[in-house]
Every structure is written in structure tokens, then in C-alpha cells.
Image (cartoon, rainbow, N blue to C red; front, top):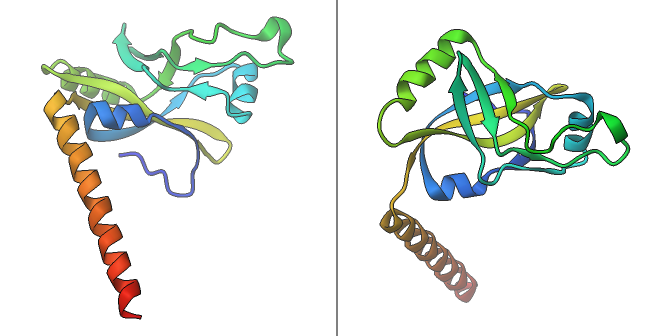
Length: 158
């Protein structure tokens, strides 16, 4: 399980929590080049529409867009290149078995600093149906209305 206490979040993939049920969260390192780290420190990274894939016993994150560093000139890398994720072999094999089940996928949930290292929170997710998304939206709206009502009634009593 990913323990993000004391970590400074760089970017979150909000769309992932909207489109998927997150079953489990894993923490992994990410192999980056120097100009990519500098670009991440500026906050020019996007996790939208990203996913993870296991091939040849290694895990890669696809669709993670890290904008080229402005002062990086020839050392800049392709912004959409697959980034290698750093996990133990047994964790990769476990995730391979879990994603083999129908409907499960690995989705990057967030990038954050843990100490001086950039880490990724990786979610084992199951896709939501349209009616599940509507239920979530309706539940959030109802909670907001209830909260507003309770707050306004508290102000009337004073």
C-alpha cells in the first residue's frame, strides 16, 4: 500500500477516480532523466489518459506527459515516451496476475515527492459503468445540499 504521508503531491489524476473503482494503491519509483525531473519540479506534467503495462517482466507507464524542459536543449526526451516503473519482481508478478482478471487495469493516480525522490501512486482499478458515474455525481450533489442546509440552519439559530 502506498503511504503518502509527508509527501508533497505534484499532480493527481482526478479522471482516474471518476472513471474507475480503485481497489488497491501501490507506491513505485519512476525512472526519469535529469531534464524530466527539472520539468516535473516546474509542475509541467499530466497524468490524464495514462495507463500502465507489463511487458518482459518490467512495468511501464504510457501516456504520462512530461513537457520538455525549456533550458534542456538537446538533452530533452520525448514527452510521451514510456516511463519505466521501479517495483520488485514479486510485486510485478502479483500485479500481472491481478490484471489478468477481466476488467482490471493499472492506472497512475498521482506523482509526488517522497524525500528527494519522485514516486508514483499506482492504482489497481476496475472500470465504472455510466450508471455508477451518475450515482457518484448524485451522491456528491446530495451531500453538498445537505451540508449547505445544515450550515444555513446553524446560522439561523444564532
